[in-house]
Picture 1 (cartoon, rainbow, N blue to C red):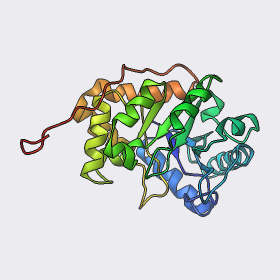
Picture 2 (cartoon, rainbow, N blue to C red):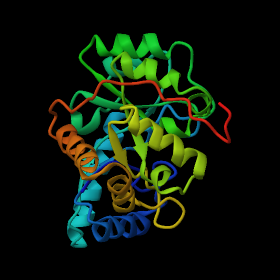
Picture 3 (spheres, rainbow, N blue to C red):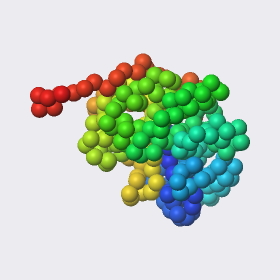
Picture 4 (cartoon, rainbow, N blue to C red):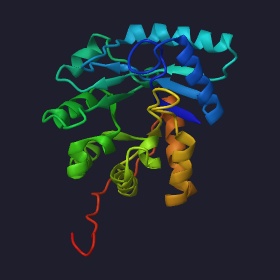
Length: 254
């Protein structure tokens, strides 16, 4: 398996605090069946700023460390950038790192809202040949209240990545249900762990894929797994026409 979202670089953000914890996370990834990880430390986060060059240097060091400890997991470059008004300038100044240095990049919203300027900014970014992937939208309060907010962004060309723990129910029934609704409405394009450690925020990627296969069939599982491969290879990923999340009845009421 390929995991396109993981906080595995030590001592950069809220992932591993040291090399020992990073090694532990790497061993857990291998045991999970993950052979490739995109390391995606936070950038433009209220507490963490990790620019392109810092991340690339740390990825090289971690790959050497894994090789020395015979951990057969390859680490590729990535970054989780919190959306901000000067996003385009961040690319021009080479502060922002795309996923495996291709055209795709992660963008994170604040957990409580989607900034008003997001739709226009992400459109402008796409005019420069870049492709935004919105991370964990199922955990965003604005999307929870109104999934049409996400539909508008996907219709405008954005992609999305759901968290494995959301699909397995680790974040609660409401987020699990919304994740399933987003998959059903073609508003999800990738699944990733967003792992930070082996206890509090583990991988759960295999469990998530198994759950997807049970709920939606093996073809949907392959869709997400193949999209991760296509992303890493820098190729065009598969996208189905987005739909609005259907309003469902609950106890006979809308």
